[in-house]
Length: 141
Image (cartoon, one colour):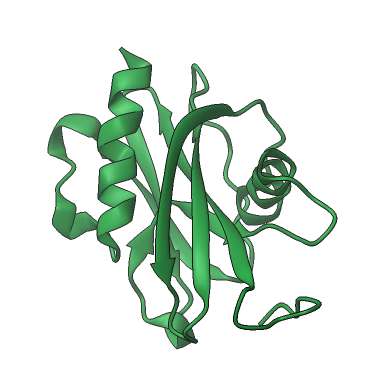
């Protein structure tokens, strides 16, 4: 787990989520086995010296090996994580014309592309990932 300075009751962790849609398909990453095997959009924590966009750009490079522009979808979720911390998660869209070559980090064991017309809520480990996907479709039209 990342360590943050000044973790106290008022601390709010900042996280990002990136919906990736290319060639009318959605990219989902599968957790490493020790994290539960579920699928999700690209996600990660914003580091202390970053803003949300900088954190999203870094996570895109770290998790799939791609350095590209992102669209801020002006969507965020607030929740408690499994450690009991308050979290603010902001959502971004990565929408290249063609599917990029994916270079997975050790945090994930595999990935899959799903045609957007076949995507279901059950494809995601977390409901917020499905809601973010639905909102991303509006940006892609």
